[in-house]
Image 1 (cartoon, rainbow, N blue to C red):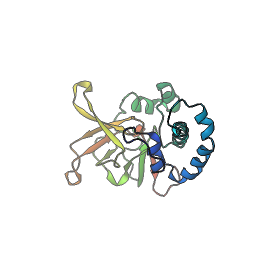
Image 2 (tube, one colour):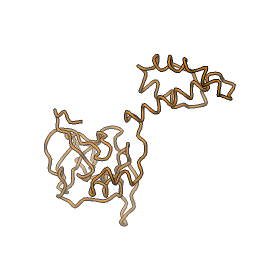
Image 3 (tube, rainbow, N blue to C red):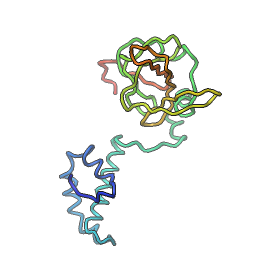
Image 4 (cartoon, rainbow, N blue to C red):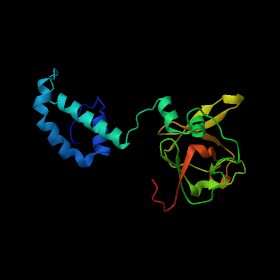
Length: 203
């Protein structure tokens, strides 16, 4: 590890330095070292490296947020300004689009389905199938892209599927999918998705 910290004190720098910005270690350390005396002059801590650690933590956190590696939570006002009405009602208010009205329920093109809120990759067209329900249906999600929560609304017990990055509501998951592919059916709202055609340069 680039800089050693206490085993009992987790630090955001340790995570970012090793997983996100490792190529920039030498450069940032040289900058931090040059400013070390200045920051330590104002530091009241006994550890002479405390101010340097704090400085580097701030640099890595700022750059990670700026590049999208770490997402800063948005308030409802920001979401409403960013999304159009229907995606906002589904993603942020847990609404549901009417069956057979979404733009992707019958889409047969090959590509990747992404979250309409944050752009995270959620589903591959390889896992899409015609469930006859009028909503885009998938047998599985991209690993780690979808989280699950119990949903007891409307006097029903269902499992809600949400984007693991922005926590936007996507739809629900049911145990009535194709048995040969695990038996799961991700029933997803079209307006919670964006589609990237295979081979497209669109991000």
